[in-house]
Length: 324
Image 1 (cartoon, rainbow, N blue to C red):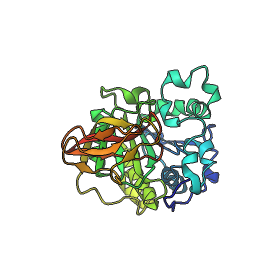
Image 2: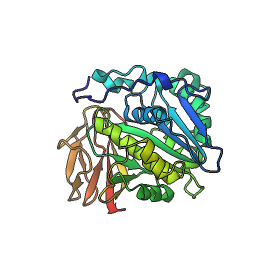
Image 3: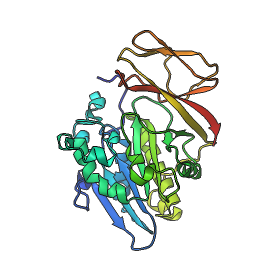
Image 4: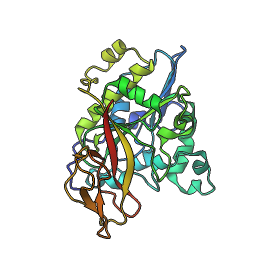
């Protein structure tokens, strides 16, 4: 069970659940004008509600693309149906993490039919494959400042700079347990092929502020993509755009700390983005009592959490920081 207060209520997405594409939870709108195919996704994890609130708001506002096409997807509906604020981690997924399935080989594997998440990935794949720009909205296990995850592609880092928010931008090589949607197909190519894909972590799952961050990121992303003009966004979504970050930091991840058991513990109650001044500083201990130390001076701790700790799970990432 969870001890953190969960103050963000679950949105009522029943009016929007059917979608308009023949795939449950997926909406697509065509402008009839040249432009990018843009996709915004939410509920890849069933307990991450902020993006669902943002998509519901876009639909309620009757927002339509002025150029190109716009796809909105409520992704892991089976997991969302199990959501309980008193035990929200239990609704992260049903059989396996939907955001670790994004290779064709894994989605099409012989055993895929046994996994509700891989069946859902099969249904979502055509929409992800046709998208030129993707914004995947998430939230965090623990309270913390919002993070924008770009992958290693310079084009995504350029977009993060153009968005001018949030303050902290994580440059990471992906997840060791499987490929994220953000890195599927063309999105994962290093050469600039015209695609852009970002994953935003909006703050703690249960913090109402995460909803405001998700709304803000939608507005910024839609404007930068050219899908909807800034004036139209301001008129149809008043109050969604938050102030720009005073500055932005690029956090270049150099490696993860992986737990050897559920007994991993931190030396301090870290919340993320702490800058540890000296290399060799003990920040925690693995279950076998082996100390975990910072590998270099001015080491930044990215998303520390033992909430999911068990053997093989990343509990924190080390990063170098520079002004973006």
